[in-house]
Length: 216
Length: 395
Image 1 (cartoon, one colour):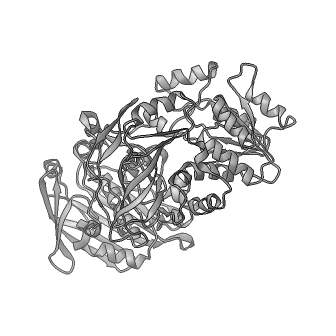
Image 2 (cartoon, each protein chain N blue to C red):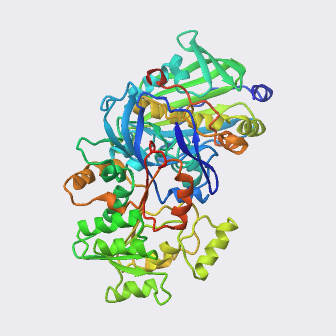
Image 3 (cartoon, one colour):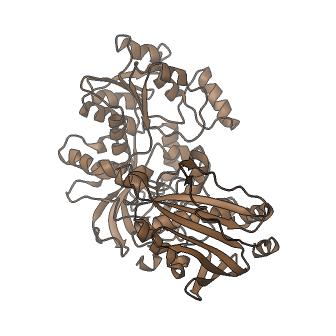
């Protein structure tokens, strides 16, 4: 998969202002469509916490490996820059990232500045209508084509689904203090069919640790 | 430990597997003292629910003694006796806060599978396929219970296990079925299916004010049990009986005020319609056999309510939606919001209003479970409810 990503690199450009927004001037805005070798994903979650709390959790980028799949290390290299390390099926993918917009309690935008992954993204924290929590919307762009995405779906996790799953993990962690998991529970012999199904259902992608350190 | 494992369609084995361990801070490990086989386990046995994996530990009705707790569990201690709800709920998301516990947002690690099928995913369930979370079940000697700070109900009285075990699913499920039917004082309520959930729905319908309950089934021991708690029974297997005529005859032609489908996706039907569904499900053109649902929609009176505790999984064919609209009926359904009902229903048991253990017909060991799944499916040996003592050895 690492090679697939490297093969399909294009340049990540900054996302436009408020591009993760779902509503503009009272109109619903559809998510951007994949084209020109770029893959887009927009995902949203309703989370029972304040925009400030959720912003703070997201902004703490060195904590990202606790809730982002396959991310093993994030090192701050400056006030707005960081180095990211992912482990995908035993292969290391590394890239540098910079924060382009940082509005506490409201939004964060970033893009990669070099390395094995070309990506740009934005997360927006909006109070939900009726005071029912916070709407968190993530828009992320990957510089890679559909073929690579399809290949990754088979071998592990395609990046679109990873964004969706990471937001799900973020929500579970923010609301409950842990991320649900079943890896490590007992079962009888899986056989070939059980093992294949586990793979198809995405169960072989490790769930990020969340607060497993405090299980015992 | 020993556990009952799903090894393929119609293939259940009791196997030695590793003991469960704490994986998350809100987990607890429970030493199981009693567990049961549910009617809905038969949908897994018969291969009607997709995303089972070979080796899965079955079972979602269980209770036991707290063995170990994670750091986030402060309400339980080692040695506490608890009944565990079959739905897993976080207690923090919008749905849990609205008491829609079975719709919890945070407990299904495989939510993406259900999202693809249903749009959104409900809570994780114990021992009930990977689309429902892939959590190991409780037909075993030990089980890991996630969010043990939220779900398990402590039993502080000396009531025997058998009287409180069914708070784990079927009593709350039968009760919510009656509550969902919006029963008003004096209503006539028809209940399809007199298995355990049907029996609890009948008893609950009377508790909520039903003046008459019509109970529909084909098995003599179930019908006798339903008459025993005050229902009028209709044996649909009697060739002179048409259920739609029967419910009209018993209601002066207007139909039951409220109907409860406590059967779900594997309804039996001897007629052409039954053959049609059997063929279509075999050819994978249809996933469920909705005979009862069709009948109940046609049977309920104008402006009546149809409550559906019976499980449906996929796509249904020939459902008379025009009749539902034409009569202006209300339909309510879904997995039970367990956490809302367990405590109040425990109080009803403590007050002696009902003895849930009266439905038990078989008490077995884990080793006997595989053969008893077959007995349960084929409704042999006058079976009404099977309870397992996971520590018993065959006499």
